[in-house]
Length: 390
Image (cartoon, rainbow, N blue to C red; front, side, top):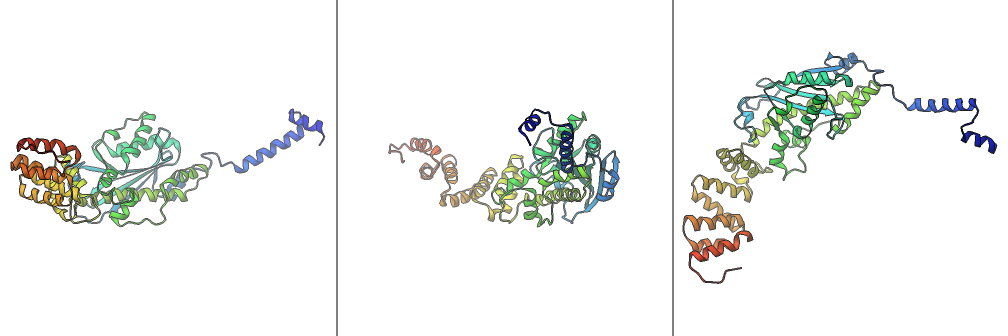
């Protein structure tokens, strides 16, 4: 190729035939790597046939499945026996989990699969799964979901406060759909699990809770991070294999919420179990105003309490006026070098028993923030001019 020809091509003066051939080659290359246009192969009826369920609106799939729960002996009222829900009584528990197009927040993230469940009788739930066959079905899904949930449900989720509910609320607002989801009472089991197990488990993810509390090990489960690609595969080329895996994953998430809720009722009642932060559970009951329940948890778990738990139990004895048991626990903790117990003993002997010398002997073992002021006051009370101990 001559230099003049090359310059012509660089200037855009290549022969028309050569330009047409080059354009055709480029289009052919682009075409080989381009997916089918969205909607080209989408057939909602085939989606329903493959995944099960029915098309309830244009492009919206709804699957309904019953699930029989193992007999745990729990009743609807029992399910409120957690610090966050205490006093609620029998409620319309509504379990919810979503699969979304991304793992971050923002209005651009939408839920393409929403699984919900509620009790139909004492031992059975109905699991409903809404699956978007296309983007246009989202508004219908959000409306139907809101209608089925209703305005009196109590939501139960796993990290739903931080993720699932904000996504659904943002998308509802985008479609100008009134949604009461953010106003409903909400039990997020992530916090319930984390309170009791964060110091004993490597993490508090849902599947970790399943293994530890339900002895459930998922087999061939599709990781949640792969769910967006599965839905995109359906939109791009009508592929349903991975989307079916997403539905199975979502179904198990919803069922696990119900089973975990029941299991955590037992955990929060206390008992002789290791690997649980019983003191954190008891403090949560105290914060909820249920001191009697906190005392019950500590006493039922007494042999498994750490030092902070023993200190809390002593404080609960003190609140009930059982000073003898409180002193016994404080003395045992003081012998192990627990500064909080030393402070409690110093206060006991100063304010209640008026034995300032003995109060002084415990005060020297308090934390530095309590050490000097307490010693100074006790020395003043006993009229001593001795040099303050360091």
